[in-house]
Image (cartoon, rainbow, N blue to C red; front, side):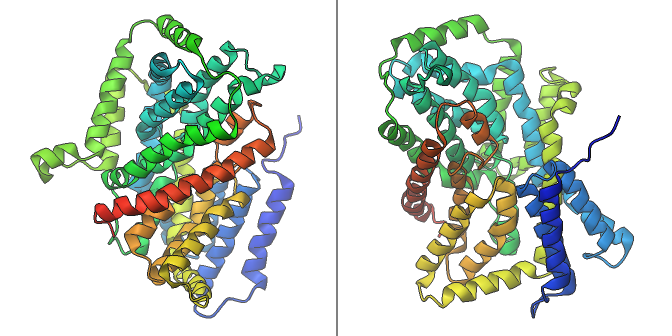
Length: 489
């Protein structure tokens, strides 16, 4: 039987042509080494292939590792080039996200994630607005230990949301999505980018932001799990409170009173029965992870009790394996975790060597000079860079590809133009999640929820643009004041 090729010809051809043009045709600019320029050519090709979905991102990452090792752009010796190509597999940040995704499997396997959703609906579900807030609170509760925002919003919360909507006969196939399904679907989705901004472990690309900021500031700024969580707490909570209200105003549900939702949620909880041994263990480990990631033992007992964030993740996974809540077979089947470790390692490696070879410094200088000529001052300049960075996401179907391609240069340009490094780092970090609101292809969660058919494309894009403005204003003004109070700038 004839085998199919492993790539899509058109996007692959575009990616290869772009790489070859940069490598062979565009002259190497002054101040850029040939090695840096050739690595840029490969990097642009890989990013273009990711955007065009020429192959799965993990497969593209294997090819990227091969190309870096084969071409020797980072090292003169073949063995040294191979070591460089594989260097990021030892990154603790990468393993933090990979292991946390494995841990989140326990939320699905035990049913604890769905139980959270039905708990909150049983309490606040008498109004459609209350159901919206219940979904938002469930999203927030799960975010710290669910680095796959797709698994959280699409795999755990979305089935709960659909079950509630269907119980009120709000079904897009029947043309009754306006009853409440449209509103709940949008709340289901727009809670996802906000919670993704609130914790390092709430979405896979966040540690990439931490890594880029640390490298750009020579490790003067290293965003720990606790620092990030405290910084994003107030603006994130305000955004979560405002979001269901804004969407309620934009797309008011026809059914506004839902007393039956409470009964429905209680029925589902009754079907689940009492909390199982696995759920109790999962909840205890959940609490332990939050305590260690937040640095509570070290705060109470001194630095001797400080535990590294990645070590904490390994503690959680080890306990789940020792107690039998998860088996090694469960871990082996967690494809998204191994996939994330692979593509994360490849992209971090390429971005790191672009920085080491001076390409990011050169490009940020070009950006800095271009913006400086406008005479905007650091506030205006950083605002322009922030908006350009965030709304460029209309061209990306991957937050990871977007962050890898643009974050480093835009952040370096901002601090060179006088933006306080910590303030601009937090704003760029928030924007890296807020940009998920924009389109139906912005992140993995969006096609899952959009694909359920509750909204039209126009409604989705309108809600996304409005929520991007609302969220950005909250993080700029409330976040900016909060970070000033905390002494971050």
